[in-house]
Image (cartoon, rainbow, N blue to C red; front, side, top):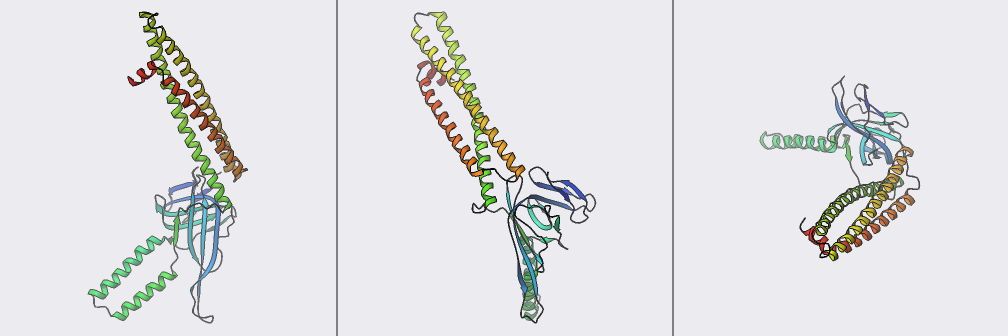
Length: 337
């Protein structure tokens, strides 16, 4: 079941995340607009680092840097990086934990990180003030830098004051916390991401097979239309002069038999594709429920082999179509279609 989302500002419940793992809402209580997503942690890092450190006996500042790679129910990989003040780990995380991210932004672009919640451990990190994205901070710093530069150029500000302001800006930039949300490339050397790659390959194969089914259905309809036209042509020939048209009638009857055989073969091929798609649906659903793809590598290999067999069968059917097209009456009808 998808986890519940709550407003990071007033803790009001906002309902559950959608089936694909995403979330968008406006809190009716505090009017805060937010977006978010949830998923399973495939990889994480958490380490402390110095922000301001001159000597052991002098005041010093530290922060903790987090990197979380999360796979959504919609099989998308997201990477969230952010920093928090102090050395304490405020968001204990394990691989496989269910995490949800809530942020202020638009269309999947994070502008300010509002909360990170670990539903598996019942822990949450809600910063005292929203953590701005790197791009937002760059815009802010750029504006301040421009103001300092213009003030020095046109306002006659003392160069020493400008230097002090620039130094303060640099120190402030170092001490400011930032967040970044990206879509990284999947890495096959990490088990969870390797499994996701296998699942995505199966999803792609499913899409290809669904496309082939539609193409084959259209092909069957085209063959049925051609059969009707050939039978109508045969009827006219038999009505006019059976003896004169006997050789051509025989060729038409042979072509109709071949077309009907091809329709039967194509229909069986469609059924084979459907059965394979059902296998994929079952395994992908089992993967989502069990949080893993049972015997994923073996099953993926089996499905890919099965798809190759179906493609070979389809090519064999196409070879039979060449014999049908060789019939002069068929060729003429197709040219005049």
